[in-house]
Length: 461
Image (tube, rainbow, N blue to C red; front, side):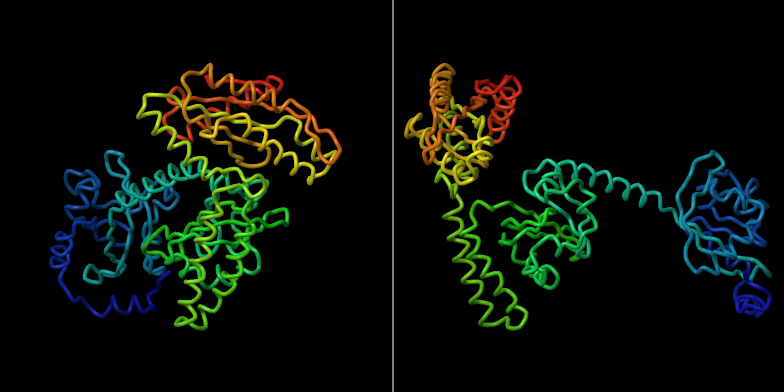
């Protein structure tokens, strides 16, 4: 607390610089709550203060302790306003509090206090700035952020936001991709720890360059179980006024390891950008562009079976939808999950499982027309797109032929593998007007088959 020997007391005893009336006139010009207190008791309040407290005049304000008009958090010191005001002066920082009007309305304010020697010893000027709109805006921003988080959580790629190099948010797809038990296992982690040691310097020193590139680049994601997968990453700045706040979009491209390895070597050369940003930098960019062009050429097909992958499949579905819309026709989608594939892997080994997947791909191709598409989207999941069908009966007949073909024994290196298939079907336009809708509906129908006992066909409701 201030004492009579403090510098503040000495200044107050030096004499008035202005008259009391001059100070009151100054305060009346202020649009903020302003009052003069002596020993914590209000002696004068301006018109803005009366309006904020909903007081018709100063009769119900003057003579009361300033703390009486503060929120309940200050109720214990309501009888000693002087100590509170002296504390604010000593702290030299504005105090956030709530002013309570005569009608009970609460207003969020920032309170500042300064000595008012013109009104005598222990007299101060109290000013309270209304920050209610600021607080409401902050709350609205938080609500908007929550809506954004829910939207991002449904994305298929891993998305995480980082502040000062630390992960502050990760969506559910990211948790699953990282093979983490929960979000908390990732939150608070340094972003450089999410990747192989070869990429540590890039994320610790060159993150600004990656943001400016505005392009995807390859890296190795370090999973929670100690393994690594190949990914494509895009880095974008969340707030243009805050470069330390950025977002990562991470896409699994582990099926294209051979192409990614070429880009991996190029990324090691990116360290030279720190040492030499002239001729060597332009050469690195040129090489990286060539490698990225090669990756785009190889990124449309599954490395194991040679079938179209998810990316090319989605393009084919969109084209089929456009054609069906022009011709007022239909398109059909089959989501196929192999029954008994895990048992083959467990008993005959993963090499036999790979051979079986190749044989299944040939089997499916022989069951459809050349104009149709057979794709592998991961594991033992296959998609058949019938680009043009006259009716559901024709598509169902094809599905039955596929089911019959999968039920035949497959010979693998002298061993016999018996599998089957669970098929979910969706149709355009019955079950959606977009590719992802049709794929989701067919996926759900396939899971219905799994629940009912497998080795059957179900059409989306």
